[in-house]
Length: 295
Image (cartoon, rainbow, N blue to C red; front, top):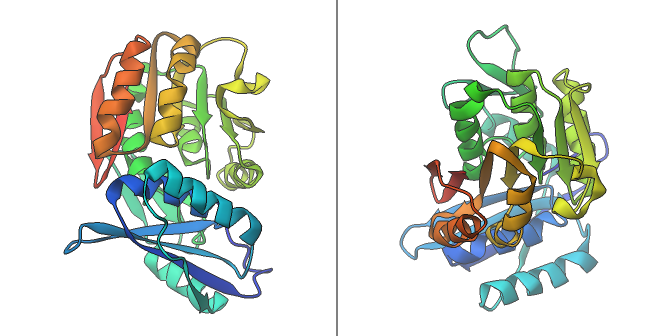
């Protein structure tokens, strides 16, 4: 995810995809995130379908968006729904975002606090400061919440070498760095994620603990050089499956992997791929339609 810069926004538009089946949501969400810093998703109970809404600067990345949507349709095996566009007043959108982004308590230990609220000393919780312009990666997404709860339940093992693949906003890396006082390697395939993770780390006083690097999964030299005691991988179901063997090869004996970005009906597929690689399920955490696996 990323943050919309309040000082530079001229005009915004909302992009909407309606009538998506549940299994198509991750692919189309990923397609929208190639050009949109903010994506929300809403379930229509009567039809059991989903609506995705994304916000971006008007016309930003049109040449990248259409091929991404075509690929999402092919991966999902459906015809892409019509992309609807509507103008949004920037200041009004930012005001609504602030109102809609309250403090969030996640599990028993984490507190997400937006920067527009007072920041008093809070005992007993790991406080993460995030800008109200955040959407995906703010802790509201079920996959992010599942990862944080999974981490909370294994943090007592005090893993030393930690990797966050597909870091997005850096929220998982920051939670681990604050709780454990360890150095974290946070990687992503998107340059804006690397930049935003660096900004969030600075905001939370973690610049010296979090190294944010551009990397394509396990292919990059940045992630080589030993094994990890804890790996976060909050991405998508199919990439998780394709990376299962590499994950097993890079996990230290007794190490833990927390996987997310998958819907409940994709758990069996992801779990089977990792069992074939020698990993064992310790816990499954469901948050709405999304699931996280602790292996």
